[in-house]
Length: 340
Image 1 (tube, rainbow, N blue to C red):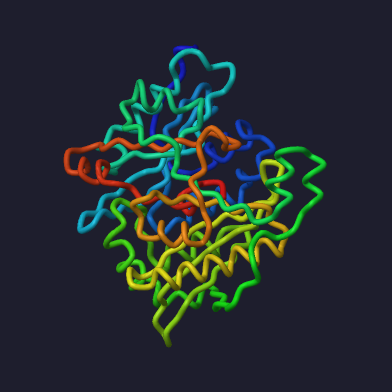
Image 2 (image 1 turned 135 degrees about the vertical axis):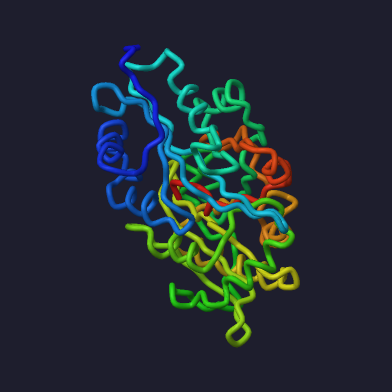
């Protein structure tokens, strides 16, 4: 590797945009509008990038997305590490680890926690050389929705026997738009009080995540009592991994409204099956407030060995005060994923 390679932390700008166009060429999740949305419009703050530059060109980088974290009465600014990439010509020289070490200098990053969802290639570097705590595979749940999804995995011909495996919903719920989230902050406060460590939600953050994201159509429904929002479920149907899948981005309710959340999940699963989704996927650990509602709606733990891709979860505190936040049980949902 050339001695002219220089490492630094930079803000989102033209150098980073050009790097994405070159290093992630053809990736629809890295389209310019999505980059602007993710890195410049996030209510939790502007992104930073650990970059390696040679001759004015970015040859390696890690994107660092600000995420306010909440754990009971404690709060911290974290950064989620995503989009780790090193130019092929510069691999084999430890550049990824050097970039990761740069990102973990708290005084330069301005945050207390670095965390992420590393794939099989990145996980050894974060866990081994960079000292992340390894929480294992993400807590994924699955609910088959159509017989063709199940039978087709036994034999392709069996997949033609395709009928819904969920009944029609017995009730419907309000479809929510960006103007309908007035009561979400109160709902989130009740939910988060028993969630352990999680990405801190707010109505403004939820509007950005679900309604402002370019080119993505999420379905968001809620249960209300007058102006009070008691439960919310957000889903997305997408064709991925050779199947049509329903992604439950998040499902949350006040602690006393778990039964309402179960009914909402069942209703949304029936709607997804009617739209052709073969299965529903969600992220929810067993300690989370919504876990019981997921299980009552028919979700089962999805063993890592059967998943189409490997997604791990890890974190590292960058200062002493963040140690308790990292060590507490985390509640993850797909809203924390950078690609769904």
